Length: 236
Ligand SMILES: [Zn+2]
Image 1 (cartoon, rainbow, N blue to C red):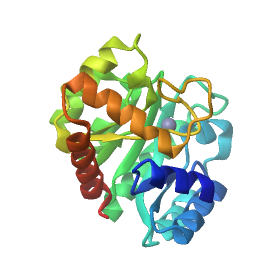
Image 2: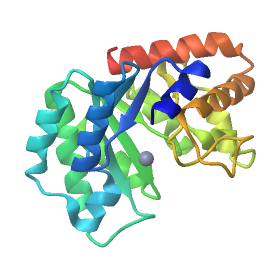
Image 3: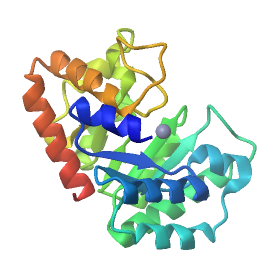
């Protein structure tokens, strides 16, 4: 892990958020953030884990405790994933809503994971009425306008670099910079031109460069702007 952090720093990545997808991983994320000044943590129960029956309503208690740590900047990933796991489908919305209510209560952003579940994810988000939302690994360009109207922040990952994702690439050109962030979703979804290798934080530079090119903007300016967005959203 120190190697990955050093490589990220060498690529110009000054700060990064690591994600917990359950209790053990959330605790590991906080420990990593404690050990490295440039690393911050989000804590949550991922919809895939909730869908496997790992969610208990009492989980809100440990989430709340972990979220009090000074390096924890968000709750999540939370949301819905109908692609990966549906052995306990009713637990996904329960976990999602509980984490949304916790984020609102704590005044923290909620980081959303949604896959093959856009309509249901949007319905729950509307119902929760949250404004402090990050759509992580953005994949629902059909809802971009509504997301922007609701004040949410869009985080673009590797898929925006894939030429076939035309709607996503078009969406990337329409997001105000103060609502735009870039991420890797490492170790998944490695950006072009490194596809086929394991993704890591340093590779976010490729995603940034691609988005800048799509927007016809200077990459250093977009770097500063997306970093400013992240600083505001995550409060660092
Ligand atoms: Zn995700």
